[in-house]
Amino acid sequence: MKSIGIGLVSGTAGVLFGYSVAVVAGALTILTDQFDLTTFEGEIVVTSVLVGAFIGATVSGKLAARWGERRAMLSACVVFVLAPIGLAFAQSATEISLWRVVLGLAVGTVSMVAPLYVAEASPAARRGALVSLFQLV
Image (cartoon, rainbow, N blue to C red; front, side):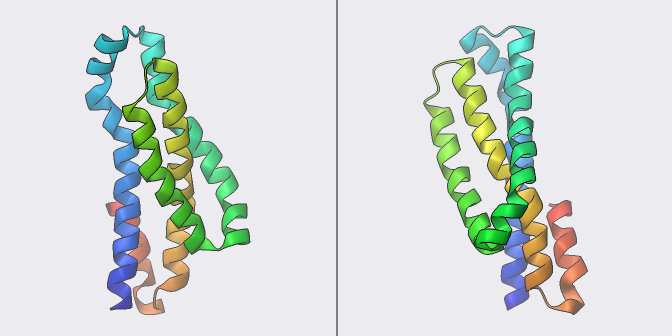
């Protein structure tokens, strides 16, 4: 039963990672029309989540060491809830980019901490499969 919960954590983290990075591709045309974005501004909107992910992955190791993997992932979950709310109320490309950087912090944290948490919490016989689930989903 514990393996199922750990698998759900790993799978959900993988889905949130992929969704947060890729979702803007479908919305870019609408954003370009609504905010009259130049090509460069569109590129900034798209890549801003990756800037946040880089920062999140860089600092999440120390965060996990200080708070523990579980609390670090819970804090990332809070950001995964709050950042889309901020994005929904964004009034400019700058605000969208800033909220996507915030979202990227959670993406980077999850990409670093979720496999670590799964590896430490899962039974040895299923460890490889459960960590791989993060990458597959």
